[in-house]
Image (cartoon, rainbow, N blue to C red; front, top):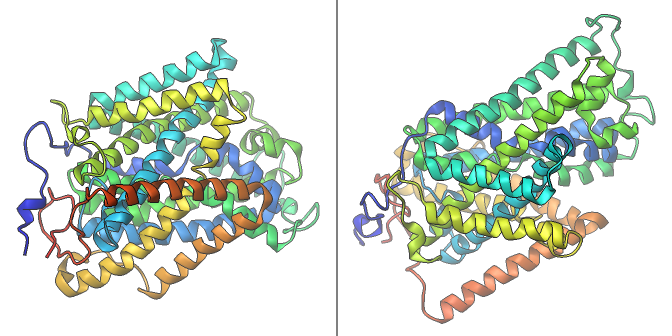
Length: 480
């Protein structure tokens, strides 16, 4: 048997990550990763597609993501890792799986860096009037500097960004609830919008499943907390809490607020597509709602931008520890921050921002589309990894299974089938087909890169039959 020590990261000050994230940081990282501008703005397209039945779309998508987080939580609690699901895919399925999902996920988030920077710049442009490209670059510089400072600074920013989002949603749930139940001044009990204007499902039940495709992407980001676990003071406790209780709250925020939006605002109103929450606040009658929501949306954008810089750097570093990326990316600075990995990711983000202004309808559009289905690929890989790791853990280290997936293995298979159905839906839906095909193109490129790497003989031993180690510093389970 290969010694566990042979797979450990070198424990020098230049290679270690800091374990300075606290439970409050981890809780808000989970919330911040999942609640972005997709809820405050993107939910409008879901409501337009499914009508009031968008509630069902959010419930079904939320259930899939909740179960996926439970699977991932089971693996993270048993073996915290800075590479999270990419390392588990490598251990459970093989080196090709870790290489593939790791690089796809990194690509996904460096593109999100550019998308969020452009979105934030558009909001600031209405207030400041500076050129959009300059504002986008400025936002990226600020968030890059935050991540370069320390992991604790990343955690603090995410804590306060997420606190603003949570406060805004809670305020909406309270005031909106008073409004629809007739406890708000000048109102009466009224849920008529749920069935008016064509009924609860005006576009048919097929539209409910079509909308799930969009909703799945809105929930994306909840998995970031499992990557941050490697830099947490109490990874097992933090992840166990975040992947169960916190995700339930996120689903409550999504579903509860969507119920109120479609109850307050007619689903076919033109204002829903623009900004459903602003439309709801305006109907309620609070002055300045539009400005307040712009601030909240900007905060949501900055939160996702902050998280994207963080998670892309950690995934790139994890790839480097396995020889799947240049070894110099493993190094950390004196504050235990992987500065090189952070800068490598933001360089791609800056180039993408330039494309957003130089070629928005061709190059930048292709970049965004080519990462569109990667989250679904990731969820499927998490399910496949959990199936194999669970059986191995039950055989070799059952004491590490302190957090377990429900109804294993049947529910795991059901969830994977659900995500496979989402991919089929993307192939059928005209405006989603391009994202699927270009994302498959990205997958093909990464698989080809691995094949070339393997052909050159530059690959580590396959850890398929790995055992479990208690060493929190090891990035993979030791190979037999």
